[in-house]
Length: 308
Image (cartoon, one colour):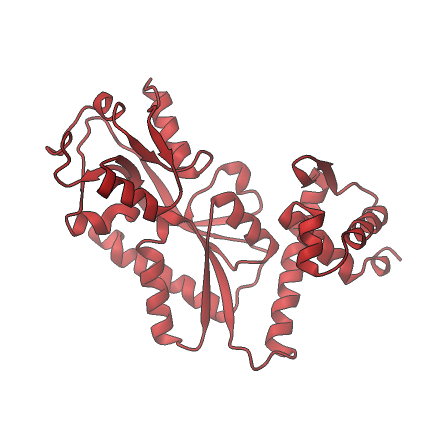
């Protein structure tokens, strides 16, 4: 029978290769020989009758059939793992769950939400994985994170996932207080583009929104740029090196509040995006993960919506 020929090791190997995009990396993760992983994937492909991966210089990339198979298999494996942790041999391990977060929400929303959650549930361990949108959404599909908090991703990346809007967050233009050139808090955008700048990495949601604004307004992108997704580095470049920082409000607001940074008033500049919670409908959240979701909703309302 078809199902009797598919073993747990087939599905486990498949998910790891899909997640890591590498047979070699999957072998290291599973602590088995690379040849064993290759053989197991070949057996699985022979059993299901379709090619699940394309092998290239980019690594092992899912085919369209492989992607559809991954969407079905990964959540089920995650639930089996969670059931084992809850009822198996690890009863002495404290309950924990993992959530994904984009850097744009790691400055204010996540710290306050996690603190509020653990003040009520001090024995529950919360792990927050920060990363780029494509990476944390892959982890969501594989069941490695319970949900993801951040800006709404592109439609192509959201297939099979659900998004719950929490609040609108705008993107501002920030410089250090007393900046020698932009100390008046007003400037022409053409002047800003001539100054050294710090932006998010290409391919991120925030960078896409900024570049779309440039394109729609016929603006040539700045030429002197440092690209980083590190809020710590971006802040340091703005505060200590005098760079212009285009950033989501949440990442810079604490520095504005304490007077380290100022937000420039630029005529015509208006850019905002939806921030919320992305979940996988095929994943059943634990009661504690669900309670953290409720905490995020409450804290986001206290921070953002109540002040609008």
